[in-house]
Length: 299
Ligand SMILES: Nc1ncnc2c1ncn2[C@@H]1O[C@H](COP(=O)(O)OP(=O)(O)OP(=O)(O)O)[C@@H](O)[C@H]1O
Ligand SMILES: O=c1ccn([C@@H]2O[C@H](COP(=O)(O)O)[C@@H](O)[C@H]2O)c(=O)[nH]1
Image 1 (cartoon, helix red, strand yellow):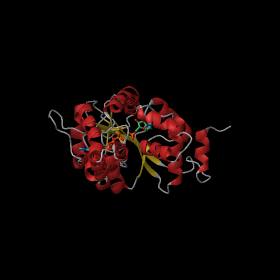
Image 2 (cartoon, rainbow, N blue to C red):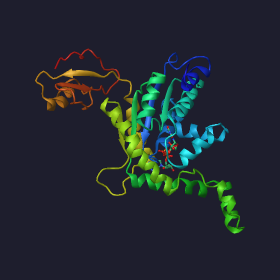
Image 3 (spheres, protein in one colour):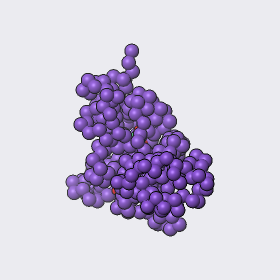
Image 4 (tube, rainbow, N blue to C red):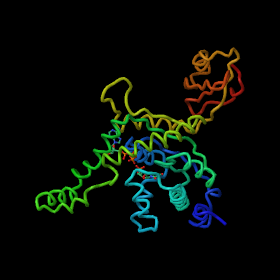
């Protein structure tokens, strides 16, 4: 007998995800690190479809589904919704889309999410985009997110005024924005992120799949990067996504030779290398038209 997720895999249009070859990039980072904001930019520039696991869960609540109340309670408490529920929603969204490139934002949230997703769908991410942001900055952003809604959306602003001037506090429920953007739930979300989500990033890091973007300038106070500055770094990751990656064996076995070797190969290689494999270094071509003949340890 098939599981719930197996069924979801088949039901959207009679086909399954294993038949539809898809490229998946996981976009991970703490609550409020700017995942959704950067995903919008990636969609515009690189033609991906953005699937926010949180948005799919919120839509499921609104749809009146039988799982709605359970999901709502989990979100209110900052807890992780059971894997089969979230994976089913993600699978359905991928099958219903005509696109084959997906940014999965805010998932996997824990090791179980990751393992079940990989085994059920047979999909491994191309890479993981990790937005690394200090906690204080994330907290500021999350607390600011609802205020921005209230200040700039005219209908919400009017309701806010009415609620205070006419003493109709119940109207406030229309302008609250995300229910989990309050300090109590934010703290719970941070705890879950540290304890359950960071290990997923560490797992993919051990497989060389993490592309980390630092969201603050180092050694500077109040130095959060703007959306545009962050996107410059994100763009570089996506632009370099496709080049062939290959190993260059340094015959003399000295890692400090690599930048010079790269230069001697015509500046075709970024000075990026992976010293985890002794004596073997990985280099990425900077230009897409570079010939790959030198992929055989010629140095
Ligand atoms: N680089 C930035 N500088 C300042 N504010 C930002 C930046 N990036 C995003 N924001 C703002 O921070 C808030 C959170 O951003 P966003 O919703 O993209 O984060 P998220 O990681 O998707 O959040 P969540 O984990 O809650 O889904 C938003 O109000 C957004 O406008
Ligand atoms: O894979 C997921 C994604 C989200 N959740 C729950 O939703 C909220 C909000 O998520 P955002 O990514 O911030 O939109 C999160 O705190 C979890 O409660 C989930 O369970 N699984």
